[in-house]
Length: 156
Image 1: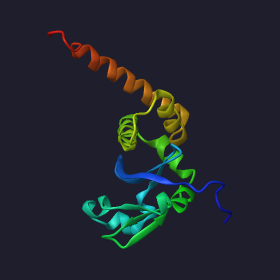
Image 2: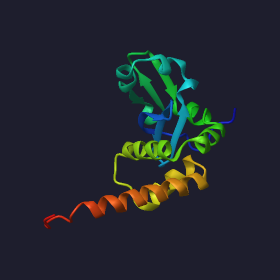
Image 3: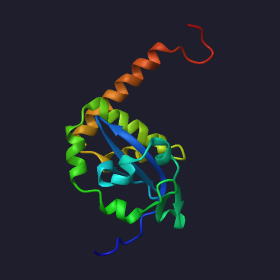
Image 4: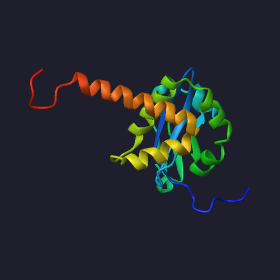
């Protein structure tokens, strides 16, 4: 296996539900979000949620360690384990499931993200046609919510 040009470095880790399946989601320092099926990692899949939540970065993000599970995963290994099949699974997800995954993924970011950063993150993770449908739905829902709430300083 040839090494990746710049070794990917993890910044944050989460477990997200997508329909009936779960994914290991890793936010990389370069802004990419890698979401792989949890079934690729049987130890994590079998672990209790409390054990999954206890993790730490090792080697400045080159790996992730779960002390309760005595498990170490390299960030590069996680990136390589993300097959094109992930896009195929995403294309079969319902819009509401995908919206839920996207919103959970955005919560991973340590810093506020600009609209273009969010768009790039989403485009890398999901098929474009599905993204347009979900973004349209989220925008419509957000507009409805704004109409219901009076602006700050105004009474309803």
